Length: 262
Image (cartoon, rainbow, N blue to C red):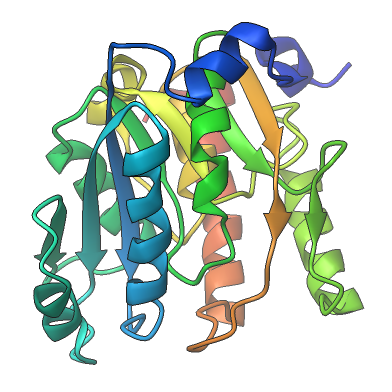
């Protein structure tokens, strides 16, 4: 058995009747939820994303704040957020230490609520799955919106290269976790889980979920199936440079886990 399989218990979460009632808003108690979305030149996607998140207010027992952590896009993002006039949406324009992982970490640290969700802005991650992911936190300390468990899927437009790239990246993460989709950028955790690793975080590249799994000591990982949809607007940020950063990131995590705590 690989070390990651011993370290992390991973299960596919299945809703039970109590969870279904909770998701329908049957509980009087409201869950305080922060959604962190890192952005760079995603102004076209933000109105659509915010509209879909807005629907959660009417159908679920959530108190939501949305933190848009923007890396100084200068593409109209500030005007878009202002025009939507949503008092639960916070825009933070980041001028320094730009990059997806640092943006997410800054957002997690700035979040005010007790449950933390991270997702992309390009509509590849379905906000409609957030209630299932939050409910799954009752039984797990880290929950992934997963493409690779039963019921999960990706767009048919995914080419062989992209699929192979994802699978190889997942294989390389095996020393750290047995989760089926540790590369996912769509995940949920509680504030107290984040605080366990907050001071140790030193991410590089774009795989912040794996960083949190390792540094926050997440041993009980759940995965909720999602359909991962290809972006329709804007351009992908994935590049060979980011893939090289991922290898650097893996080396950092290996040293932290198996050699010394740095």
